[in-house]
Length: 367
Image 1 (cartoon, helix red, strand yellow):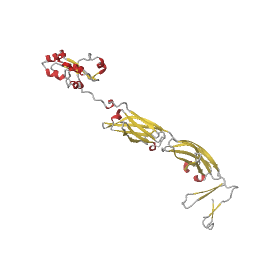
Image 2 (tube, helix red, strand yellow):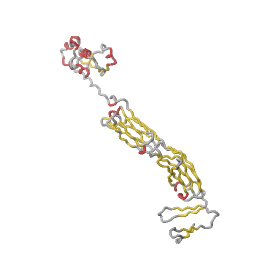
Image 3 (cartoon, helix red, strand yellow):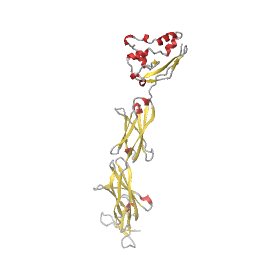
Image 4 (cartoon, one colour):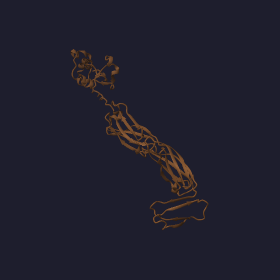
């Protein structure tokens, strides 16, 4: 028997029953040709007279459409035409040839769709920061996410690298998308944040996308208020405080310039009626020294983000200065006397308890 050249095709659209029947009479599976063996004439007859084998009255066997869906072997598609022309037919395999008396060449099985080729749409990953900048909403949908059994969103602030990375487990929503909330307070950094997505499909976890969002830092203006050399104090004024998440606190670390920050003290600023924040820096908290003092201001937002919004310096020239330092309960106090008016050759500090008047007065010699 002569070699019969055939090609395997896949029909991309459903066909009318009559057309399916017409095509089916051209179908000669490779196994049938192999079984015929020496009776090649029978196969030739079938191929030469396809119309004689057609059913009357346009009837179609119940299994004919199944045969098409299972991968019909047809010799030509030239007569399909119309809506079943070349656009509707896709080639599925290479040429299949059967030699006389030989074994049939097995046709490839129909290809199954890979996960990314399923009708799940394009993968989408977004990260949206709330108006008050307290949390970001991360949503993933389509593509690999539609096929996933679980999705995670590792998130970190770019400041400091991944030292604050947190893996957030996403929850699947009714529409098939995955979502998780990222609280900014868990990271407490201003600036850009990176969000990666990992989807678990068929038991394997793989990177599936990335997104980002940005958190603003609190802002404010800093200035020096009243300076009082006699009391050894100066005010730090913080105005125009701005933070989308609100203001949790305003702190003022201050220190004397002599010796660096070895005497740094953090002062809490309090909110005033005019909306400003003020803190009083006292020389008594810093060794009662003269000279320059430095102060920085840190504002912490309601989302936990702290930012240094500025700094100031002030100079104190202590005159007729008297201060008492020492912690209550420590059992002692230190009295400081600096630059008394008119000068002095000696300084004494008489001290007594108020209970019982001056019956316990003691004169202490200052050195």
